[in-house]
Figure 1: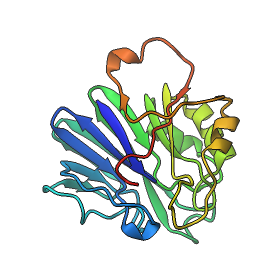
Figure 2: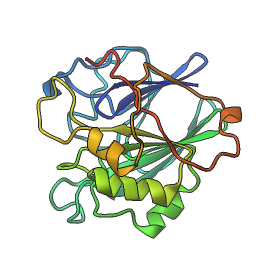
Figure 3: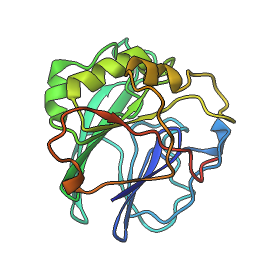
Figure 4: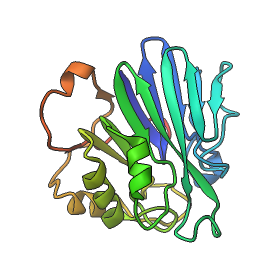
Length: 217
């Protein structure tokens, strides 16, 4: 499996010929929208920076709400949460997804904005190999809150998302605050993250993977 970051909360997860895209964004955010053929698309909520399927080719299977889904050998579980700390009163609902592919579990938290991860939500997420979590604050959890969630879920790898990058049209925090909270030291960004089940091993320590922004600008 190969994971590439297109910017913001948008990732391309490729398994063989299958391409799964998370939270594709519109050009309004100041970055170039992803353009590729997709087999599956997950959308955490209906905001323009997370739900732009128009630039994607193919006839993808679109998942945009809580529930359980199965397609092309991929199992997806959508979990309802809130986009803010006021039970959705400010920004509405957010759907987290656990994605089981190649016998690995990826959790994409979308624009999770609650003050903390509720125990029942953590239980529903379950064991996670790769955690994709927002860290920029303002519209989502911030660096400190994100680090607490990482400790709570104990994934083998964590990939930060939804943080400030050059060209982004709105102000959120950069990724450095999260790296500091994680005690990660210097993390060298990589173009892509290639992972197989055998790479998980018995190591219990969470490793931060910083993906360089790809074709998304």
